[in-house]
Length: 553
Image (cartoon, rainbow, N blue to C red; front, side, top):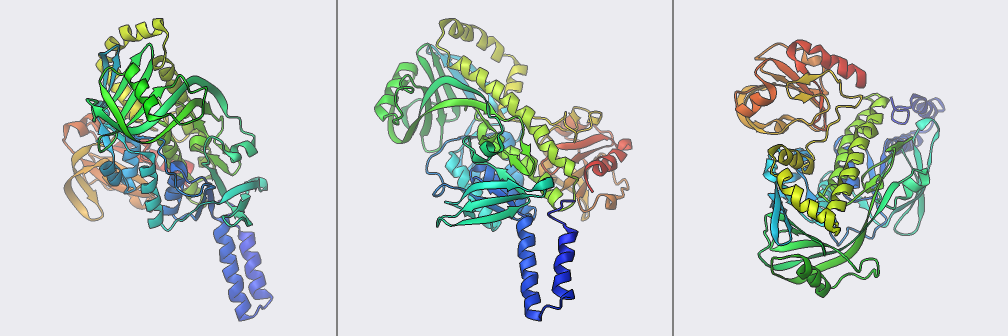
């Protein structure tokens, strides 16, 4: 039980002075109000940084009943767009939170990535092979994604405090919380106490620096020019287009309304910090892209280099690190923002459960245990891809031209590549939360629960019903979900798990369902973040109780 959430000594002390010392009625009322204000404050989580990572943390914690305060030193929402791609796994998770539809309506769906080299089509990655209902890469400017997240926070009565900066913090002894010094928009300072601090401030995080956490990695040698603009030409508007030559590299990402984002290797990038002009971008385009195109109506441009860095810990006492505070890397594959959002979806159900006195404290350690391997793999993959695709070395360029077509023509490579891009291949199977012996056909504990359309017979408290659903429509992102598969109306003492576990009896003869689960009686316990906690044959159902007892109070 968290000391700051349920400090019996503090409660007894307050009530003792309020009543034993015979305060007047008015003083007692004021005192009780003060106590509740104090209680609310120490049960709060302070989030420093209001980008996609910080807003996701605020969204998750507040909807699960945790008091949050989110601050950002910026004047207000960003007016420029950085990240662009929202991957299948992120859409699956945001669908459960009611905000995916607006993103899908505003974004553009890229169904493939086509790689050109020396005026020829070298290879194509088929993104429709992503094993999800969202078998594409959704291209939507980050400022639109942030706007959608802000609107959701408003619905949850969470207000972002702009021009508000954390200037210092102290961790209390024995993991009792944090005391934070905050400078407000009017220049005044205040002290705020919270149970936990989540640092989502970005690559130059003062929290990370204060903790002395090393941000190890490399500065990559490539420099880039970037622009959001229109292209008058035959660039596909439903594909990512990548152009490789010995003169450089250009990637073109289609947005809505015939707009594109162009990213190009920038020979002048190490000589100036000025934003590239439209004329300069046109020269880069003409030198590399064999498809004629006229660039116009530029909205914004910039220059940037790439750092590939990560921390070795995501938790120091009562402080958590996530998003760009914990990892930055090449934009190859469009993984960065997605990884930060998924960091918080992994962390926040655990933190909320612990603060409510539901989960054991040890569950918080699984955040870094599960996310650090994914972050490390991401950095390694994006570094290799960036070095290969940007190389002007004639030997490497020749090897790419020779080897890439036969490699990408292999079906297994296509499927694996699509899963990596869509971030569906991430698994927590090695973590303490995943029983290594708990398996069900092709699924094992720690894997993502697949999301497909099924016709199912489902039994709930309302009775039996046949309907067309996705498994994710039966999930509750605030609780565990127990699927009893092909078990008929078998009796189950569900009161043992309530109210944390919602139970569904599910059966289907749809081919995709049978392929996943077979037709034998079985069970799958799904975590609030839609990863599998434990699974097995129905005769092993006692594993559910064992798993819950290990982690849930």
